Length: 175
Image (tube, rainbow, N blue to C red; front, side, top):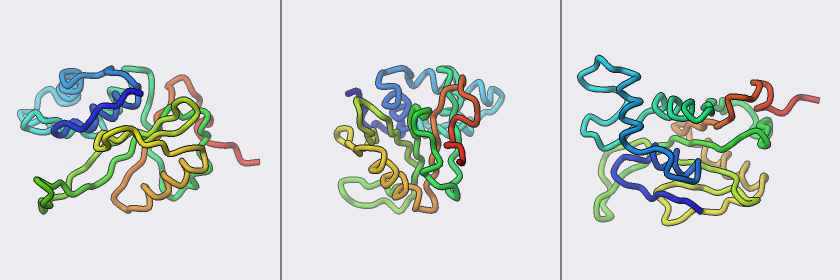
């Protein structure tokens, strides 16, 4: 199983590559997207000014569009069981974390991107901060995992779906 580990602030890059299970994007690709989103800015708001990553949701969305996928924000007021998992390529989660240096916490809050994907009959947490992918399990286990993640008010979740799908395909139809 393909799994990129966390390096600097490139979690968005790692989340994309882990989602696609291959090195599909490189730093230069995401930097080019940033420049295309805001070509006239001296300081690009879509990435770190130090060139260490920290890409925003607009960059992830544009990168996915290049591969014919789209990022759909999940409204946490909806029931997770309303998601039609058959049509979801994967999930991207953005959450806060507290960084540390040599085991000592730094008094900053940072954002972190991670991917979740169905692979070989199981769902996996492909977080680049993990030493290896973590098996979540079946659909029920996935729903529990996602519910736990989005229960944190500062966490956002996105569905990754094919551009070819009709908007109504993402959700289970009410009977």
